[in-house]
Image 1 (cartoon, rainbow, N blue to C red):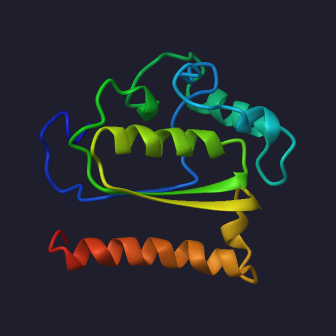
Image 2: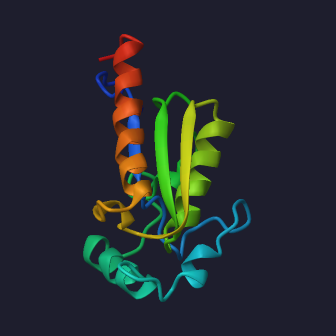
Image 3: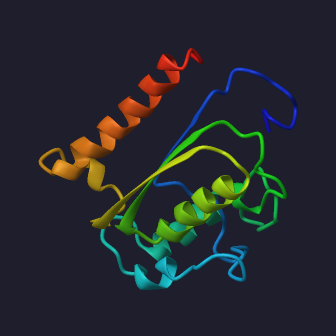
Length: 150
């Protein structure tokens, strides 16, 4: 929306385990989408919980690109993005698809995939991957500052 309204100030996107499109609207003809079914019984956040969250957020499902950014007609001109996804998460393929859409539009993307881990793994401080996850965010924001954008 900031891009579309030509507002300044957004210099980067940090999308940690992002929700980018409702499962009923996901463009399966363009991107692989097996994670919602593969991880329907995942620990922490499973597919039924995601359905419930969507019902709270948007009871009437409409293909609004501001609510479902993967559906945007054009991703060009968006700021650089860090996208981090968990392998055992119903949301995995949404994050991967959004990363692909941004890359196809020429947006710089750093993609981190944490295979074998569920949604919310980053809250478990004893995991090496949790520290990596948080440091990736710090490093990305630091890189924006080093580029003179902050």
